[in-house]
Image (tube, rainbow, N blue to C red):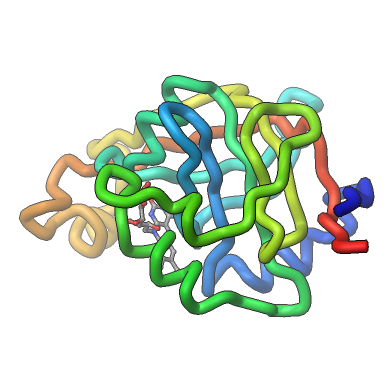
Length: 173
Ligand SMILES: Cc1cc2nc3c(=O)[nH]c(=O)nc-3n(C[C@H](O)[C@H](O)[C@H](O)COP(=O)(O)O)c2cc1C
């Protein structure tokens, strides 16, 4: 397996086009874990290339990022989604299962969090900044839609800005 380095900004359209069905946010704290995310963005802050993700407090992923201060994103290419990976990583918790059993891990290049062969566009990040969302600053419509069900009251998202430390495409040859 080989890693072909990329300028990740050349792939901004490709990444944006698959965010709604979901990309993968991998972490590697007590163990490897991956969750589907649909919210996030590539960008620049403080002169650094970054990818920002939004993780609810209840996710197993949150404790992992808080501990290791890094994450890796895995993005499908050519819209090749894997339904089983989406089901497992998008609805089950790392508290209950070992998600490494459902994906093919690929050793990281610069941070310590693996990529995933099935989703070859890989973005390795180190945590730059984290910001908890604040109820008082949210529009009423957002609170109503995302934070009003019994289990989601107070279950806000944290924005994690990751500084991109490597980006490449995993190639099988
Ligand atoms: C399409 C899709 C997009 C999602 N986007 C997010 C997201 O941006 N942030 C989030 O906290 N959860 C999101 N989720 C939910 C998590 O993927 C899901 O709760 C997952 O099981 C959490 O895994 P974990 O507890 O092992 O971290 C999304 C789920 C799907 C199916």
